[in-house]
Amino acid sequence: MRQNATVRIDQARCIGSGQCVLAAPDVFDQSDDDGLGLVLIAEPPAELLPAVRDAVDRCPAQVVTLEE
Ligand code: SF4
Image 1 (cartoon, protein in one colour):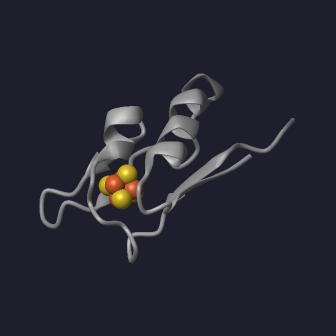
Image 2: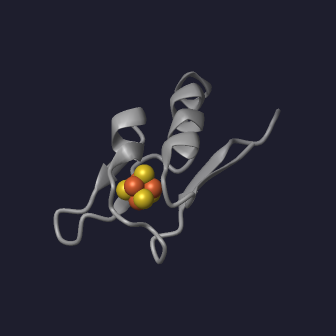
């Protein structure tokens, strides 16, 4: 069996733009406290990976990573 894909946000460099949430609302959220991006599903199922890849592309700070 292949290993699950893993998604991460480097919160230290996140600028809270929310592009990740727009791209993949099932996988990302923004903190109510500081607006930083949050990962809701660290190992998203295959059907969500296209949206996660979109989030990786759209993050202006380039701090969303997907290890596949
Ligand atoms: S798109 Fe990038 S910079 Fe914007 S909230 Fe998400 S992780 Fe942070």
